[in-house]
Length: 102
Image (cartoon, rainbow, N blue to C red; front, side, top):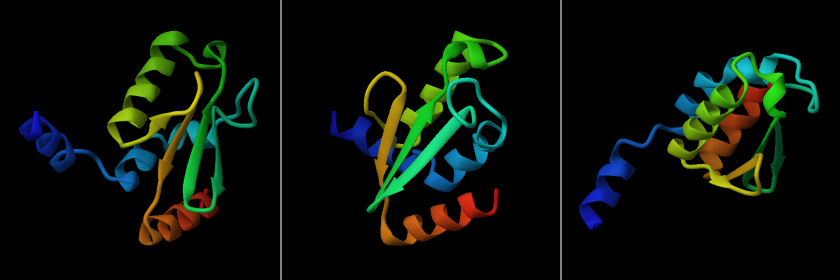
């Protein structure tokens, strides 16, 4: 079991890779939320909220794919459509700059 955990940690995408992969969803208007993916930064945590299934072109399939990318990137589910990750100080600064550049 330890080997699987070490393997997953070694090949887990960074927060930078995850956000860059999902950039389209942070810039496209949503139905229930302002954008398809909304974010909130509180202390050293990044919260991401997904819009309703009907807001995505492929519906449930596309929304499930986004959840997979977030989980693979280290985000933890915080409800049915919310995810959270604790950021290091360096990552926190990068994330703030990344969102301000959108």
